[in-house]
Amino acid sequence: MLLHFTKMHGLGNDFMVVDLVTQRARFDEACIRQLADRHFGIGFDQLLVVEPPRDPDMDFRYRIYNADGSEVENCGNGARCFARFVCDQRLTHKREIRVETQGGPLTLVIEDDGRVRVNMGAPRFAPDAVPFDAAEDRPLHDLEVDSETLRVGVVSMGNPHAVLQVENVDSAPVERLGPAIESHPRFPRRVNAGFMQVVSRHAIRLRVYERGAGETLACGTGACAAVASGIRQGLLESPVDVELPGGSLTLEWAGDGEPLFMTGPAVRVFDGRVPLG
Ligand SMILES: N[C@@H](CCC[C@H](N)C(=O)O)C(=O)O
Image (cartoon, rainbow, N blue to C red; front, side):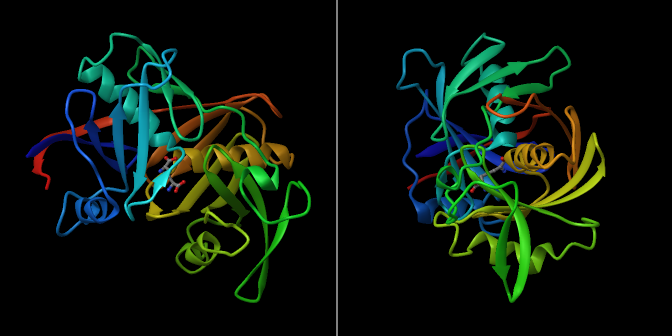
């Protein structure tokens, strides 16, 4: 069978988006890895699958798979592309869309300028919520990596994040430390590793080594986690502009227990069809 898909990106974090409201398909890990391959497949950081909701109060269910085939709880850049996709495909006429994810419900609003504002829910810092192996909740934890002690903030945005403050993201050892943090045994479900440079109280620069995808040009939940951790440590104040290698996002957060809002672009690149076994 030929499966219709759309290639999209949010700040260069790229996606294959599939409508399973009007089509049928099943994806296993091997099939996702093959489609994600940038030489032998379509190539993407994440596969986004749009399904009918299970909860009648929601508009859709949105499932997310990393390039390595693992299913994950949340994807911020993907959420904005998902909103743009369901509107462009006329799967909804709503401008405010409620969607189920594995990491909890999200509300997305398409703004007049075409950008998408997402209520990403409240960041959680408790080690059990991340999950992270630690006895207590602290703004920073010591993490032994390659005989170095790193100071990381741990945050759940539905999915797990570790945030490390660095002097300069351009020279930060993302290729060396990223994989070691991602698969550190104190993160039993692995983790996304963010490298944050504080530019001012309202601006950071960020690179993220993503769980299951490697370093990407942008990570929306990574931006949320870095801002939440930075505000919690007293380094930042809302709103915060986050500059990633692929472009910028605006983040707003009123503080503990409050939802975090992310605003940014979502771009459709092309439509295609691919044979699926
Ligand atoms: N690119 C995403 C995050 C995708 C999932 C992540 N790699 C994970 O495994 O949790 C974003 O924009 O948030």
